[in-house]
Structure formats: structure tokens, C-alpha cells
Length: 273
Image (cartoon, rainbow, N blue to C red; front, side, top):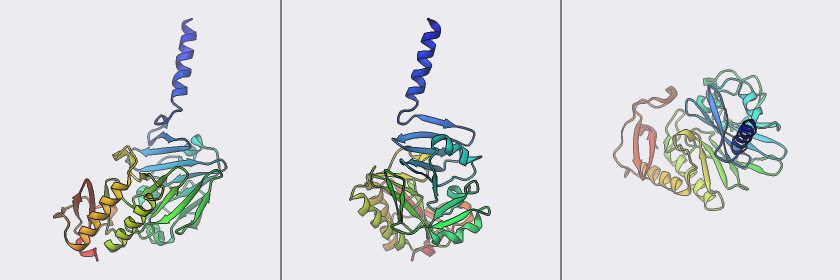
């Protein structure tokens, strides 16, 4: 009788662990949690983020984190479907672990950033605004959103109302004026483009550093980012103060930070125009 009860208990735990917001895998580098049907978030110990989307015929891995051992084998635990590996932008914390894969996809404007990564000997496929990835029962759309980097992209699943943004709009805080330095008007245009998308059926933003937020972001977040960027551009932003952390050695010499309505932008004052 006791053995029977134990078996039922274990089976129940396994069954519950397949539900939404259930952790389905973990190791020393990362943990994987199911967010929605056929959607998983991968959170690394250094607080970077990947997403796995599974369709009826193919799957997609969005970003690869910094350094996760045998990431290809880990992803294979979640899905056995043929895999697209798509990089939102070519910074180390999002593309540092591309080496296990034979093919990667990213925007050509970020090619110059690859020299800061380990050599990649696989095949590079360039994507552009409007490109589509057919996963079978769902299609993932590419939208170019420069600002954080020249080739920053977001990936849209219209069927689920989701958008995966990498660092294009930050995770509460966005880094702008990083080398090779885009004018802040570039970011404002991207915010405007994202706001329009979210006014037409995109409900959730899944950002590039999910561990800091543990939730999807809404259109209000984009609107606040746009307001703050516009205020920086026209000189009406709240007074900035020095930002001491120099991220990956690619910031300008005097990064500053300013905040408004719960969002923040790090920028280089001499590079905003």
C-alpha cells in the first residue's frame, strides 16, 4: 500500500512539472521553464536569457547566452525538431555560445561585432526586416529594431501575440550609445515601430534578461521608453548621473543614466545626435 501511494505521488509530481511555469530542466549553467504551450525560457546563471519555440515541423532557439556547456544537447532535451538558431544581436551575452551550432541567423549590420566573439566556423545566414521562419503551424517574423546595436532584431510570433526582443528595448534598462554608436533618434524610431506592432495584436514582450523581471512586458513599457528617449533627444530628460559599469568594454568614456516612469536609459551624452 505504501509503495502504491509513493508511485502515485511521484507520478503526480512529474505530471505537474509539465505545466506552465514549471521548471523542466536545470544544470550548473542554466534552468529551463515552460512559459506557454510550446514556449520555454532558458535562464542562465549570469542572468542572460534564451527562448525555445517549437512548431509542428521545426523549432527555434533565440540567442545562445554567454557560455553554457553543451547547449545543443540541452536544447535537444526540450525539442527534437530541426532547429533554427537566431541571434537577436551579436553581443557576447547573447551570442557567446554559438559555436556548438552548424548554422546561425542574424542581421548583417551586426557582422562587425562578431570579431569580439570566439571564431565561428559554421554557416552564417543573414536576415532582414520582414523575413519569415516557417515552423510548421506557426510563423516567426523578423523585425529590424536598431539602437542597442545596428543589427538588433526582434522576433514576432503573431499567432501567440508574443515578441522576443533581446536587448533592443532592454529589460527595464536599455543600453544605448554603445559602440558603434547609433543616434538616439534611431532608437526612437524603433520604439515607434514596436509601439505600432503592439497596437496590432502583439501583447507580450519577452526581453533578453528575463531573470531580472520574471514577466512579459506590455505596450506601456515601450511607450515609457519612447518618452524617455525623446526627452533625452530634446534635452528635457531628468538629470542624468554617471553610470559606473562599463559593459563589455564597448561603452563610451562617460556613460550616464536617466530614468522616467520606471524605465531607464544608459547613454553617452556626446553620441546622442
